[in-house]
Amino acid sequence: MAYIEMKHSYKRYQVGDTEIVANRDVNFEIEKGELVIILGASGAGKSTVLNLLGGMDTNDEGDILIDGQNIADYNSHQLTDYRRNDVGFVFQFYNLVPNLTAKENVELASEIVKDAQDPVAALGLEKRLNNFPAQLSGGEQQRVSIARAVAKNPKILLCDEPTGALDYNTSKDILELIERVNQKYGNTVIMVTHNDAIKDMADIVIRLRDGAVRKSYRNEKKIPARELDW
Image: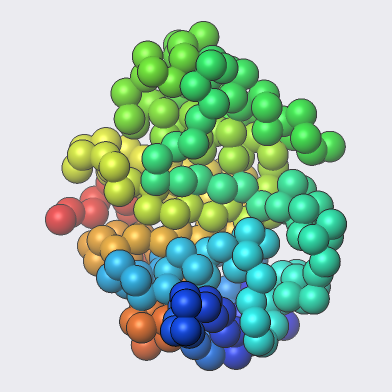
């Protein structure tokens, strides 16, 4: 059994009299510790998949197996525990608490789990710990966001367009950082992006279109994030 499996997953939304199928019969498998990139245009269903894997939303049909547990059957309390203990989130726009320093933002995550870790030195944040988010560049804020997610020592790290608000050079720095986190801590990393060039750094690439998996494959020869170009 794979570490993560989505089996015949459907997610539907009702907008007035119209039913929108955000995900339709989504199927894929991911092994523990892999770095996975989910590709697709806006509206392809990428973020919906990420929200389902992260327990932030519930699917309407099918199974979502995480380390043998079907989180599709979890109640709200179980999903809260799952999000707290097993999942780290990195968002496009950082979602830092503005009136807390970088250090306090990271500590906020550490305080809600039992086996927290200190990723500050590994992520190069020592000199910016006492700065507030408004005093940090976009790239520095994203570093803090990643540190906050990694501090929880999560089994799964979910990244939703983590370079979407960044310039080219800063984007490569952040991708290299995510790659380093994956290698150093062994988290299973799932990153959503519309940037096709990023796919070459992944172990597994999953392409979505119109809410369905159109292609899923393993990279036989990964390219380090630093060598990506677009």
